[in-house]
Length: 101
Image (cartoon, rainbow, N blue to C red; front, side, top):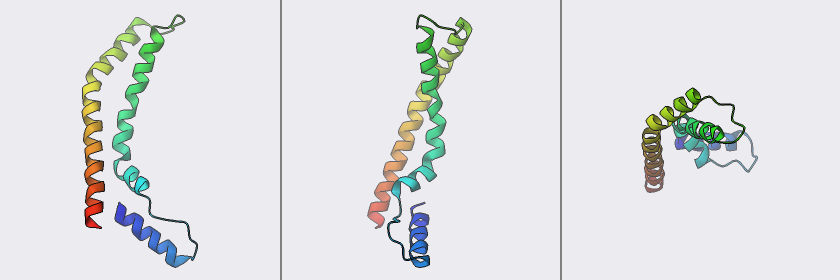
């Protein structure tokens, strides 16, 4: 992905003499790992539903609470493991980029 960003930057520089566009490491990371990161983004919504259940004006039934709780139980370990794995992959990719340069 980084090579694509560099090529994109070079082609834009050749096509027009405008300055200001640089290859973006963040954009390359999001293109590479964004789908994995977004897959783990639903867990906070389940937690917020459980917190809303315990508020005084809750409209959630107990069955919905149990469903959210089961989802939380089964997904917590997997999501933490997956997020740590993606974080390690990003760190290795950035380190490899620095050493390759």
